[in-house]
Amino acid sequence: MNHIFDFFLDAYQNTPTNQIVLEAVAFVFGIASVWYAKKENILVYPTGIICTVITVYLLYVNKYLGDMMMNFYYSIMSIYGWWNWSRKKNDKYIVPISRTNTKEKQIGIGLFLLTMLITYLVYVGFEYKLETPNYIDIVTSGIFFTAMWYMATKKLENWTLWIIGDLITIPLYAYRGLGMLSLQYLIFTVLAIQGYIAWKKSLNSNQATA
Image 1 (cartoon, rainbow, N blue to C red):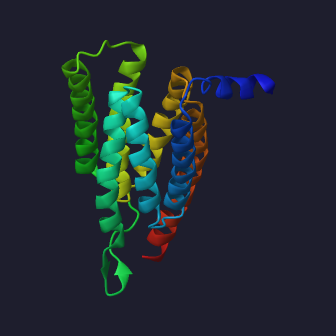
Image 2: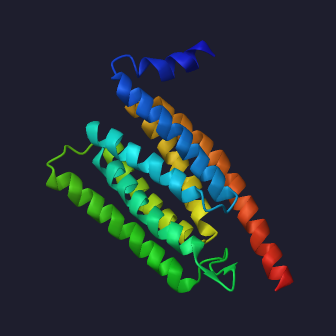
């Protein structure tokens, strides 16, 4: 057990105190955001925005450009999702949980490929030496970009993409020495599985009563 604590703590020996505090704040708000998403609660977005804005800064100072771009996008998409989820007609929310149709799946694949290309070009544009973690970063960027769009439109498949991306990101952040963020993504994975189950149950219930 001590080895596990040492693994997470050793990475912070040379980290400025302000960055540790900011990462801890992002950790708390990130967990809260996914928890609210699982509950289909609009607070997913304000808590998520706080988390992603802080994470953008932390990734920028650590020069992880792909992940930084994704978190910047999360901040923008969170504003859209906040608006989209809060829309009402006759005092009822008009964006229900649903599955993606063929067109939306095609759009998702297009977003995935386009995001990977843009992320790669950003690395090249900054003349960044690409190593294995960066290529993994490029792939997860595509996954998370698409997942965020699906979440903003309340598509069940967003959870499947979060689970896949989270499982890839856990060891990636651990390798980079971002211990708290690695642990955060482990918790994200558990919550994403619970979120998928909860949303699927809600979707089946709505279809049964329709």
